[in-house]
Image (cartoon, rainbow, N blue to C red; front, side, top):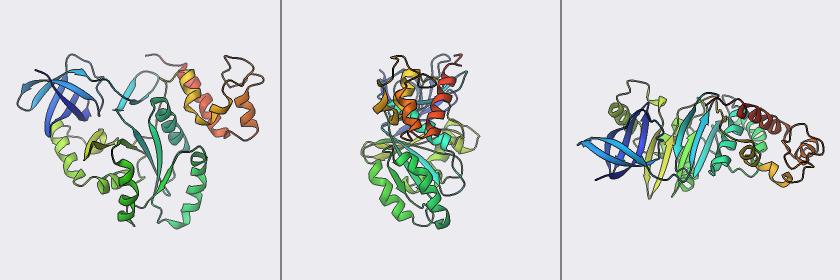
Length: 295
């Protein structure tokens, strides 16, 4: 008889599944690798601590990134995405915007976390840059994991309650420090997962899920610099830029791509300063990428 568990870590075609508090090593049948961390899966036990994944339960949401050739599943059944940035080192607007677009397209609520607020000299500049996103309605939470850990936990813990959250960000932003504050014994859990999956690799190279109790969880993804969105269609892209919404349907041509067309309401809004030029430039870049897909 099949039993249902939750995938808590993935490395290649090897998965670690939580089954009522027991951690099982699991594999898929054949070469299928379409399982994501956060998936609810039906398991056929093959030994006391090993199982085969027979099927994947219906997903509420799926977050993934893709390049020209393949897509990489990040996590399933998420409700919130937290993008961690910091006063130092410098953060990339491209990665933030792409992450926000991915969240919108997947139907996941996005938040920003500004870490290292104790670096007072660089705080005003960071806040100013993040205005581009807060002005679109994305909430910003300011913390310092190192200088004021109690405040960081008090700020973020209520946002995680009852949610299935993922933390993403570039290396050096302090994402791991925040996870360690919010998840007691996170480092022990990572060592257990690493041993169970026998990765023999540095523990930050795989995505993993930590249960917080009360149905809440945090998924920690490896730090990455790139966030390809080749899988998004034109229609998905124009709707994933929230600031386009008031202008969609206002263009002269019903099939307007908002790039060079005459009497385009979106282009007019860019011209009038109502849509940030760098965001529209990214939209054009993503449209170009979506046309290059080979898979």
